[in-house]
Image (cartoon, rainbow, N blue to C red; front, top):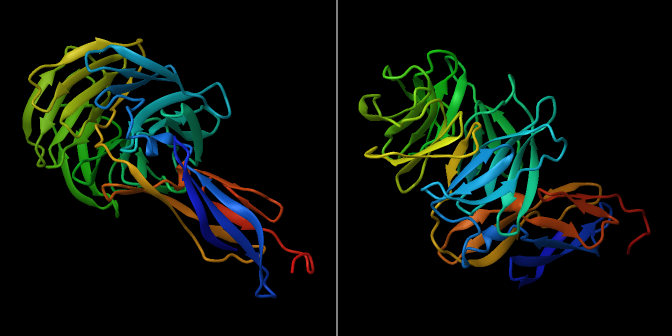
Length: 379
């Protein structure tokens, strides 16, 4: 199959690119046009940053009762978004993160059923669901964290390109919490009791580069790290603690609540912690004051909406093999290029389709499969 760009057009909410697709028989060198490979960005958050964002940068997102709730920093409810599960009504939407492009990722688990990473496009108010195969011991609920093109949840790394999974295997006790630090490292809290050992991993190799034990708390339930490697934790006692990279306590503050469940650190230095009873504590890295507001009274996972810079899409690029023979497969990828020079892989976030599926098909992740041509059917 040979693909060449035919035209691209702006649809208002995204780009639409059309590629001519040809299939090549194994026993002859001629090509026959069989379909148009159409790639449409249907997730408008990739392209919509020139307009007011559907999610307000700097606000807090909370998952509760299988809903995503958006709050201001002072605790005013802005909107609520139901989180569907593609297979069952018995589900539990746990932790949540937001990418720099504005997509919302929710870990959507279902007891005795399949677990998914559910992706919400706030601009078009639509969901996509990607099945995640559980690793040894199961994924369970836990901190969902994002670094580059990889999602992390407990002992599992999830490639956002094809949603394949890799088990994070490290010496010592298991993993109860994992967080991607702004310094490019992964911060892991041990399972069991006491839960106060922090292993710091290389994000590529998963090798331990440092390990500290903090004796000021016995049960960490939330961890984050800034660009300098300073560590922030919340615990079951309602405390927020700050440690340097050696594990030395720098400062601490009781938030006036209890049973923290989750912690998020924004790029601008704000901290938000969610508790078992639905309270949200908001402060900054200095811990000078803490604002606590109540939500709906159940376990609350939290994240900040990134305060992304204004940037405009300049082009959509499709990459893949120059040709794919009959009865074979080919992988295509989509990237968005912005006017500031940034580029983002959006292969899993665009809509792939063919104008005709008589001799070929393409899946949601850009994998094209060609069928066997009968001799004499095309010339």
